[in-house]
Image (cartoon, rainbow, N blue to C red):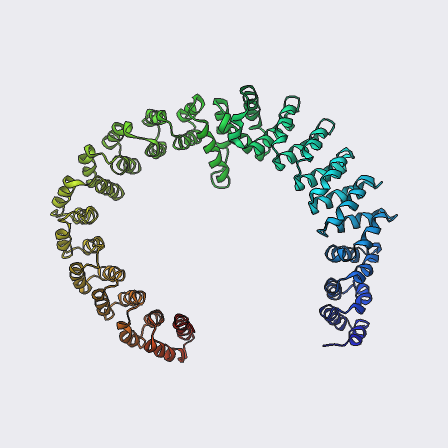
Length: 638
C-alpha cells in the first residue's frame, strides 16, 4: 500500500506511466488529498493518464471532489469539459447545493451544463430547481435542457410545470412533450390536448404520438374531436393513437356513427407512408372493417416480403381473417394474381365460417397446381363433413402427391370416415412413397377389425414394401393378433421389416417380449441390433440388462457404444465389471462412453476404476474421468 505522500509525489512526476499508476492507486485508496492533482490531469494529452484521473475522481467522490471538478465546466478544453460533465453526472448529487447555485450563473452554458447534470441525479430534490429553470430562465436552451432532464428523472411531481411549459416556444415544446410521455401523468392529457389547437403541425404530430403512447383513455374523446378538421397526415397519426389507446376490440364500443367515421379514416390511414400507422390501421380494421378495409390490407400485404416482413405479413393475414368473408376477399381468392390469391387462401384458412370451405372448394379446380396445394391445406384446416365428397373426388381425380396427402389426412385422420376405407387403402399402391405413408397413417387412424384384416392379408404379400406397411400398421393397431404377426416379422428376410417389427413392440419390458427381442442381438444386420439395444435401454428390468451386457461384446463398435450408454442410464451395478473391462478397449470412444457410464452408476469399484483413468497421460480421458468422479462425489454429497 502506497503512503499518501508517495501518491502525491508520483502524481507530480513527469513520467506519465508513474502518474497513471498513481492515479489508479489514489482512486482505490480514495485519497482525497490527490483530488487537486487529479483534476489537473484531466487536461492531460496522455489518454491513459486522463482515463485514470477520470476513474479516480469518480471513486473518491464526495463534496470536495464535486467542488474541485465544477471549475472544469468553464474550461476551453472540450475533452476535459466533457469528462467533467460525465463525472458530475455520476457524483454531482454529493454536493447538491453547489450545483443548484450554478443554475443562476451568468453564463448560460454553465446553466445548460448543470441542468443536464441534475437530470442524472435520480433525486426528487432536482425537480423544483429544474422546474424554476424551465419556466423562468431567459435562455431557451436552458429551458430545453431543463425539460429534457425532468423527463430523464420521470418524477410525477414535474408534470405540473411541464404542463405549463407547453406555452413556450416550439424548441422547448419538443422536449416538454418527450418528458411528459415518459412521466405519463393523467394531468398532462388536458395540457397536451389544449396545445393541439394552437400548435404547429409538427408539434401537433408529436402531441398525438405522446397521447397514444401514454395510453390514457381520457385522451380518446379529445383525439376523436380533432379528427375531422385535421390534415390527413395528422389525422392518420390520430388514428394510430386511438387504436393504441383503445385496442382494436374496444373500437366496437364506439357509437355507430363514430365507428363508421373511424372506419373510413382507418381505410385512408392504410395509405400512410409510416408502417406503424399502417399497422395500427390494420389492427383497428380487424374489428370495424369491411370490404374496403379488406382490399386495402391486401394491397399492403401483397407488397410485403415473406422473409423480411414475416411478422407484418402474418398480422395482415390475421386482420383480413378477422374482418371475415366479403366480396373483396372473394375477389382476391378468385384473382389471377398468385400473391393476392395466396393471401386470401391463408386468411380463409384462419376463419371459423361455414361458408369459407364452400368458397375454397368452388375455386379449387380453376387454380393451378401450386394454388391447389394451398387450397387443400386451407380446406383441411377449416373443412368439416360437408367437404367429404370434394375430397373423395380429389382422391379419384388428382395426381399431385401434396394434394393427395391432404385429402388422405382429411378423410382418414380428421374425419375418420369409414366409408372411405376402400379408396384410402387403395392409395397404399400409389407410386409416390410419401403418398403411401399418408395413406398408411390414414388407414391406421380409421382402425377397426376390417382394417386389421386388410393388413393381415397384406402381410402375406411378396412385395417387401407391402409387408413393411403391414407390420408397421399392425404394431400401431395393436389388435390381439398383432403379436403373432410381429413374431413372424422378426424372422422376415428383409432387415427393414425386422427393424420395424422391433419398433412396434413398444412393451419391451414384458417377459414374453424380452424373449422375442433378445435373440435379435445376434441379427446379421447392424441396424436391427442397434434397434434392439435402443429398445432394451428403455426397460429397467434385469432381463433387459442381461441382454445389454451381451451386446457389449458385439462386433460392431456402435452397437457396443449404444449398449454402454443404455446401461449407464439404467445404472445397474451388475454391469460395472464389464464396464471396467471396456476401459482397456482400443476404441477411444468406447472408453469415453464407459467412463461416462461408470460415473452415472457410481459406487466404490467405479470410483477406483475412474481414478486409474484420471492418472493416464491422455488429456481427454483425464477430463472425462474427472467429470465422472465429480458425479459420484456429488451423488454422495461430498
